[in-house]
Length: 233
Image (cartoon, rainbow, N blue to C red; front, top):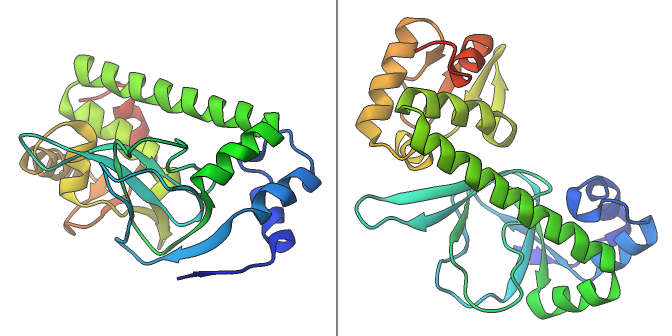
C-alpha cells in the first residue's frame, strides 16, 4: 500500500539516516518530498533480480534481505537491511539482486530518474550514496574473507551477531533472530543441515535455543560474541 504523506513529519525520524548525513532539515525535506511512502507486508518482494531499475527504496522501518539466486542451491543472501538502509541505489540498468521483506516494513520510494536528478541538485546526497556503496562493498569483502578463512560455526556466529541489529527482537529477556535455517545457510554458504547441526551443539551448551525452524533465540549473547571472534569452537 502506498500514498501521500506528511514529508515534514517523516523527515524527523529519517534525518539521522546515513543517506541524509550532514544535510540541513530543509534539504532533507526537499528530498523526502520527492518520494512516496509504501508499506510492505511480511515476506513481500520489493524488486526482483533482472527487472529494470525503476525505483530507489529506503527502508524506514522493519527489515529486508537482499539476495541472488544460487546455481546449485537456493538463494545466496548478500546482506540484511534494517531501518535507514538503501535497498538499491542504481539509477539505470537492471537489478542484480532481489529484495524481500522479513517482517512488516515501511519504505520511502523514489522514482529512479528523480533520484538521479536529486544527486545533481544535492551533491551531499550523492556523496552519502557513494559512501553507502563503499560500505556495502567493504562488508561483502569481509564476508568473502570469512568464507575463505573460517569454518561454518565461526561464520554462523559472526552472522548471528551481525544480524542482531537487523532482525533481532527482545523476547522475555532473550534475543530472537527471525531467520530460517535456509536463510542462515544462505548467509554463511552452508547447507541447512549443517546449520542445524551447529545450532544443536550450541543449544546443548545453553548458547541458543533453536527448536523453531523460522527463528533462533540467543540465550547467552556474550558466549555467542566470543564464538564469532574465534575464541571458542
